[in-house]
Amino acid sequence: MDYSAYARIVAEDLVRLKRRIQNSGIPDKVIDQNLIIGTWNIRAFGEVFKSWGENQASPKRNYRAMVYIAEIVRRFDVLAIQEVKRDTSGLRMLMDELLGPNWGLVISDVSAGSKGNTERLTFVYDKRRVQPSGLAGEIVLPPTADGNPAQQFDRTPYIVGFQTAREKFSLLTAHIRYGKNPADRIGEITALAQNIASEVRQRATAGTEEGNLIVLGDFNIDERGENPLFKAFVSTGLVVPEQLLNLKSTYDTKPKYYDQIAWFMDRLNLSFSEKAGVVDFAGAVYKELSLIDMSYRLSDHFPLWAEFIVDRSTENMARVLGIDPGMPDPFKTIPD
Image (cartoon, rainbow, N blue to C red; front, side, top):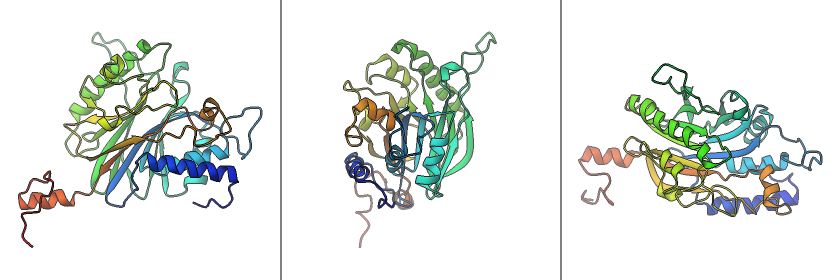
């Protein structure tokens, strides 16, 4: 990335942002070794003011903000983005001007009805490391037992299949309705958890994308643990890795855990590296602004990430030798 044309204030922000990214523990992307998957609600990601300066009529997101967004996005192999708006010009600017030809995009249609807030669900991916497998679809609820149409999601969840090396997997992203109080959200969370378990998980064939399912997005869950919203989310077997359980995903003073990455532990063939985290950028950029004003430039949510290992050479070699690959040093009995 060529930073030579950036103003000093942008360069200083980028130094601080790079420190935050490094401090988050997110690993470097290593060819044929690992896979970095993430989720990020980028607040009202629509049109971008095409200038480095502020638009006084609407002082929100501009080119300066997009540089910071791109700096975060390029650390992922696949990133699910929520709250992309009908106008995708900002997203296209990110792809064409900042990320470049090595990056790809899969984007859903606009949510129907006023409750969906004219949002799209999106995946951005590094084409050098990941490719779409061909699977793409929306999660639609079946009719009720008496044949009546079921109440659908305000923003239809979106599932897309990917492949890297010899691994196939699918990512299902959602943005659950917010509502005036938490009780308004539990219906959609419960319906999605049940549908994933009964339709996607149970009908998946071993080795296919659906059989290697990761669920991620903004579920508007205030708390984890005994919170009724979180309990509904994990009620059918989804598990959030313990590395994410105590990490807030918004800049609010009171911790909020709206965003999640989860999977069925007994079905996921991808090897989780036991590394996951959040990129907390609050206070690192736009130091001249309040946090609320900053959130309209970057976001009011932080991106979550999880690392998976795609190098199965040790596992395969151990299997040939009849050794448990889970041992701390599986090959110590092999003589020199």
